[in-house]
Image (cartoon, rainbow, N blue to C red):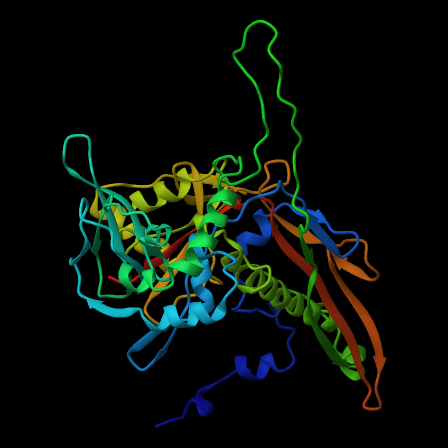
Length: 456
């Protein structure tokens, strides 16, 4: 039996490749994503490194969410967090808040249990620790209608602090296993002397003229006849507007001079190293624009612009609710798995969302708004994520990206590469930096659909 080496009559391909010139690809990188957010954001110059957002004066009346602490299964409300309730906003006495926090009762409820019933006396304030509940009303013809969905940190029944006796105007029913903290009216009455004066002051402050967004009102007259006295007015501004400072992502690119001198054909080693480094920096930039606790979109959405899914998975009804809260929605951003979950809900209803052309490619959409993938949106341990909707552009009072161009040694807008020298090991170093931030000009420019279940 002759071996392959004995019957071969010419040079083999393996041997020939050792002296042949091969055709090569440039270095590839699996971690490159579409980065739709960076491409769709309008970028505004922050020439001084800081961007100030001036707004009309808004009266804050306690529109936050309550935070809790726990030891095992026992949950307590953080006393200072009770100031998130409108009637206790700016309440001065921490000792009273501590005593009140100790008197909350913990309630554990299962799915589809009724917490309060419309028409019954409202004698408690409820804090929602975890879970999801539905706020139900009665329709025009007596049928049950869904008024809203409440989730972690929400509250209801805080009108008992005002001292008046009233009835529930809605029914609250659980959708999931739910943990609540409840405080009875009798316990609140213990602190009536200290709370009563504060509530009266709060009501006077809340009575100031304002529009439906909480902004200081502009007095106008319309539809009049003759020569009435016209109201005088002015537009009041926030006295301490928010300022966004540019953030930075940096790294040091190192390359041995021997590699740069001898191995630059057919591809420039420095150019390829720099290209991959810039890709990684841009990925990090988009991650920060989504997740940074200071300026990231997930943490800067107004609490009134956060809604929860009605049933768990993202449905067409949920996206309709999200889009209805703002004008000129430009794009929806979601994790690819959340987009797949939305697609399953559409399929189950026999709906087929159309595609639209965007940057010479076809992308999925809903109600004419592109639904774009963004793998930087996190998925929680419980398998839930978020879907963002943005109105963009300074002219439309939307979400804008911030950057500074024209910096020394700039190779891309807002990104520069500066030579740092050669060390004693003949390794050259380059500082690669990119400067960026994002600003939400008015609260309704950004909305979030929370607790989006992506499984099933």
